[in-house]
Length: 95
Image (cartoon, rainbow, N blue to C red; front, side):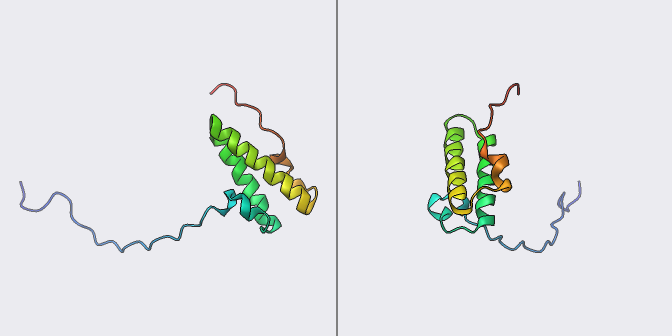
């Protein structure tokens, strides 16, 4: 056995701390002030969270998503940008 350690210690530069964005997309109080683009992003993020969730969490995200879509339609009218997320999602079958 050698007197040297098994693994050498590499001199890596330290990573800068990443700035984490706050999740304003899920705050209902922020939706009224959001521009159109950000509200579309919020709706798509809520749809993604709804698809990935199970149980009561899925129902909560569905309710939030539908409220966001209703607010979007009141503020900006009908848009093709949210129509894909406007319908109720069917339950997953199989896996």
